[in-house]
Length: 156
Length: 76
Image (cartoon, rainbow over all chains, first blue to last red; front, top):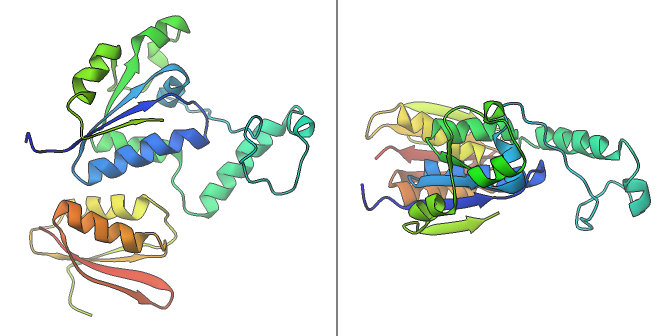
């Protein structure tokens, strides 16, 4: 068992697009036989909500492919964020990309350990009842206990 | 095409779903049995090679058939 490879990930972002890397990598690593742990901190904790409501925005992200050129001030108009979110979800569905919910379920099924940053929970006064079941709470030292023995360690 | 014991149609699915589905299906199979996978994700060609190398499940065959990618994997 001790020769099992380990992957440690820190998930810090709470947007629809950035929810993918930690869950894709964790689920795949688990399928390859890695023992995997994700430490969710700051906005990354949004990925642990029972009911996910992740959004995507092009603001501050000039690299996002747009269907047509659009001035930043137009991108900032009310309703643009939800429009972009539903366009992104539609695109992902049409390309056979799994939903974040599905990937997260696959991670849980594969026994990927998920740890919520206790400090962030306190800081933003989050209600742990809103999080999915089966997660643990811990701090930086908890993360290093696992990460210190990991073969791969990623910050997303 | 050699015989196989089970087939998995991962057509239309994108990374990492074909690998995850394959892993799950292999989990329900016996050692030595062969799984045939059909996928449309071009990335799956390299990914199944890597999956096989890392998990020890032998990739017996990898090919293309009518625009789809097919794989034969023997469970270790």
